[in-house]
Length: 69
Image (cartoon, rainbow, N blue to C red; front, top):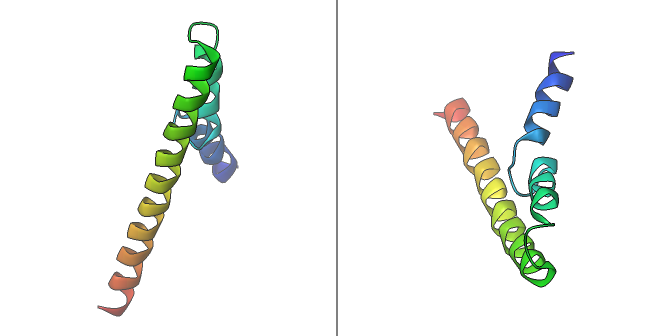
């Protein structure tokens, strides 16, 4: 149960590649021109994915370092 709650909370956060990021852009849609919003959404998601992957790599490297050293 706790794992499901944790996953739900993480998905609602406005982190760009996750569901909360999409919700944030959906909320902004009526206020911003479509072409600007699509371009901004693309770049924010692109940078967000890179940051998320970098975070995963850093945490994995730290865990491996702790195991062997």
